[in-house]
Length: 389
Ligand code: SF4
Image 1 (tube, rainbow, N blue to C red):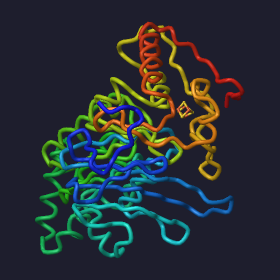
Image 2: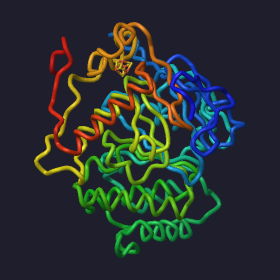
Image 3: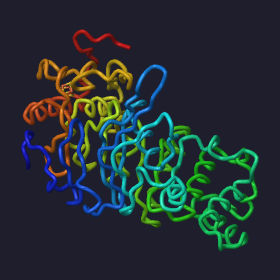
Image 4: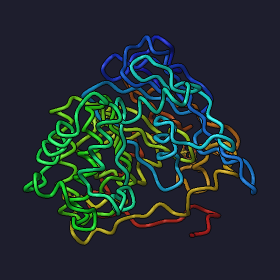
């Protein structure tokens, strides 16, 4: 196991020997498309010019993903999760948006690519499911016609009859009963869960290599959430796609993900194999997310512990560690938290975090925290000088 002071080199390998990283300020940077992953994002930076100032929505994020693998991107609202996925899909508007860094999909560079080429890839090689299926489906058109259109754009030689049959097959595969009848229904004739199934059918109709699900269960009730997550998981096994699941809820990605990327203020706070991130999280922000997550292994009377404060404005990101105004552990480090941006450093194979705490401090604090957590002893505390939002 590498020490906490190790900086990831280009030869360093990730959890399954496929991530190569170099340290950059506040980020890890993959070594390039030659590392062989189907999707590689390298030092991605997305900025928006607004009337109030420059928004640094994503600031040096890197990760890699293979077909058949699932990456969970976790963080609060405004952490840069969705902006990252929209950059991959090429859905940011030009003009006020600046995108730097590299994104490779099956070795093809997407940043700076011809927009017409990105449109060809979108839908065919990469597809996205949004959190609100009602606003994603056009209310005036039958759901079957909308899926047929998405299919025929990328299969112009297929007849309408073939496309309709493919649509009916897909609706059946995502669990819509009587698909040959429901294909002619309008979006308002479906429940929220069924509409999300329709969106999944539309996303997968062209058998994409990459499926991005942005908060796919947020608008659904709990039992339907579980069904949709199971559906995504089983369809991934069937289609072999790479899947990115974006969520603010660690519980959503716990079962599904191979890797977890925890984002805060547009940067990677922690990145590694899911089993490592859940069993031995390295970053105080991840600890906070876990302490605020309901768990079956806790007493029912145990209070959930919120993270104090709110995420920072991405126009005025705090200096040093962006998490320092909310962090309970700055006292163990001192001024460095406020002045020096922590690098994303590897603590064990493929598992890295951006925090100035030493390996021994992290181990001790997590051990105490997780033990107290299970025993229900954690009490909410606010860091010195912090004003609760
Ligand atoms: Fe907290 Fe400091 Fe670590 Fe940031 S660097 S997470 S402020 S201890």
